[in-house]
Image (cartoon, rainbow, N blue to C red; front, side, top):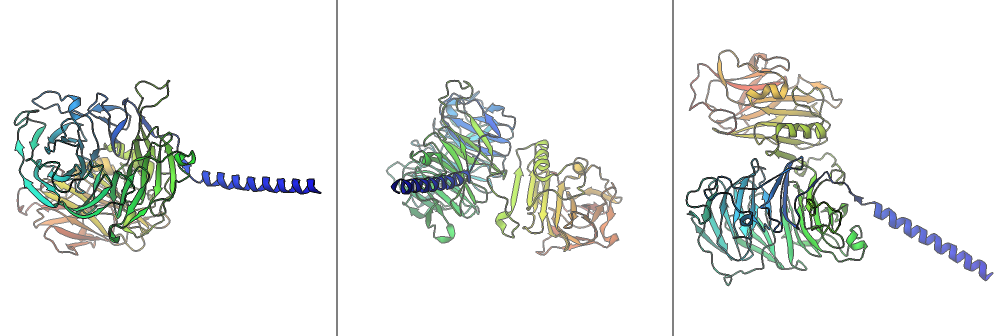
Length: 620
């Protein structure tokens, strides 16, 4: 009897153990583990200290590896950052080394980074990889942390005890804030590195900003980021996190509840994240910046925690909408993780040896760039001791259901990408092909706007269950042109809007357009609209409305519609269409209403005088 009871108890224990292990494995398998990166970028041979990614362009720095910094393309080849037009000659890589952070501007056209060599801030062009200027804030004690304003016009810098800002267009409008006292000053031309008035890389040095003993001393800065409206800046260093009003730099809030020294901060949408080695706090601007922990305990989804090692977060980067977070940690072997901010759940993890940096693609593409320390693999390629990895994380994040929430809007500015590279993105993600008017809706479940080469083309997809397509804006020599669909039609389920230079219609829709008889020039870009019902069938005979904002519009113009198969336009008013004042009346804005869709353009009548030198819709 005893033996039978013992055997029964043992069998019950085995069943309970099996159940426990089954549940444990099911929980473990709930987190996706990515093992194969999209690309591996090889050249650095020391720990990666800074990195940034925008579309198919990446920039990286390593710790004193003999390179000033590398710019990578989609094929994984690199060019070394340089300033070739300096009268000083080629810049020694050491003068651009020891980079603490590098940031690509929100519009994707420029980059900025700080150097520990002389504590300079360098600014360059993404298109060429060449620097066109640098600034020396004359702090003389710490490397500066740089951050771009949302409109890409200003760069802020902070060292822990002070913060400053300058205008990128001409490296002027400096100011600095020591504590809560703003100090405004003018730049001084010249400089010992490049010489006075050197072409290519202009040098500016502001006035002295005080000494380390000045008020408001804080530990070395470990990060800063602007709010999406450009009115505030979050910065962190030591145990402190601060919120400053911009542009005056006044400290509005100071928090010292980070649970350790800050190692990184970010601000996207309505989410602020501050990170220390073992803690991640989420702050909401609308709640008095109250902090909540992203997780409690040590998440077992992380290899570091499951192996009993100590958490050691090194960086954090928010998705452009602020809904997801990427972190790097060098605990145990090192890894990168993607989190859902609202729930604190880990969605996927990626191995990265001694991960030191991770950054989210700010162009809107679902990818991360991550780097770490030197591998201990004795058989590793000597050219790939500290590889960078590009990770496609689209499978980590579930596709959102259609929602009218503005947070679902996705705007991709592909200023750094060639037309061919953007075509590849549209073909892969949208199922969209350039060269013809679409006959079926793209395979996309959300509203999205893609701007190609900064200004020359834009393609927007509209989903009736989502928000409106943002206005397509083109900065030309005469001002800013804007095109926005205000009403697609009641039976429209989805639509495509393309904005193209008049001269580029052959590339975009497969035909060249003729200027209408009696007219001299195109005042606008060409707006091509395609609409589809719930079955995917084309809709051509229902009213559509869109606004056109044209600098120096004047009078004496007409709107013409070009049928999908014709190079000759039809006067819009002759077929029942109209144009008039916009909802918000402006001398440069007209509201176009058409009973049919295809391609539309605004043209100057030959007998009408221009109000000023002929404007051109071509981008400057």
